[in-house]
Length: 277
Image (cartoon, rainbow, N blue to C red; front, side, top):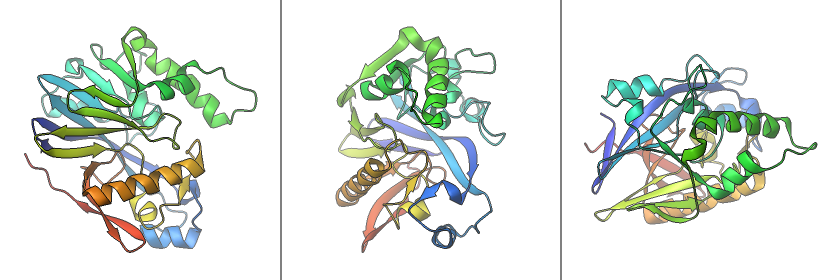
C-alpha cells in the first residue's frame, strides 16, 4: 500500500487515473524547451497523474481532493474503485478536504446521477475559495473557463450544501493546518500535517508538470486564475519546502506523489519518497 506514516497519522496515496494534456497549456516556456524538459515531443500528449490522499486520523477517514469524476477523460475517475480496492467504502469517508475547486479535484464528488459519492462526508473548503467559486456573482467579462467552472462547482457541491465547512488559515483538525496559497485559484490551499515530530505537506497544484516547473518555477499554466501570483506562490512554497526538508504530497506528482524538495542551484528537484507503511 502507498502509505506514509506522519506520527499518528497515516497518509495513503490513491490514484484517480491519468489526465492527458499538451504543451500548449504551458505559459512562459517555449515549445522546444518544454519538449526538452518533459521528454515529450511537441504535439504529443503530456500525461499528468491525478492523485488524492486518504488520511487516517484518530478513527476518522479524511480524503484530500475528490478526483475527476466521470465527465472528463476515460482515463480518469478511478478514485472510488481504487478506494474500494484497499477496503474503503466511499460512504465511510468522514471529511473531504478540497485543496481547491477545479474539475480534476472536485467533479468526483458526484456520480453519473448527480448524487453524492461520499454521502456521509463533510466538505472542508477555504472560505476564500468558496466565496470565489460558489458565492460570487458571475460577471459579463469573466473568462469562459471561470464561468464554466463556477457553474460546475455549484452543481457538484450542491448535494453537500448542508455539510460544507468553510475554513480559514490555521489548525482545522488536530495536527492538520490549512495554509492559503493563492494564484492557481484564489483560495488554493495547502494542508500541513504534523504529528510525533514529523511533517508532510499536501500541496495540491503548487506543481503540475514537475519536469518543467521545478526547473522553471516561473512557468505558468493557462488554468491559473492569476498566473503571476501562481508563479510567485510556487517559488515561495518550493523555497520553504526545500529549506525545511519537507516531505510533500502532490496531486500531480508521479504516483504515489510523495517526494522531498531540494535545491539544485537556481532550480529545484524532488526526490521520490517511498512509503513507510
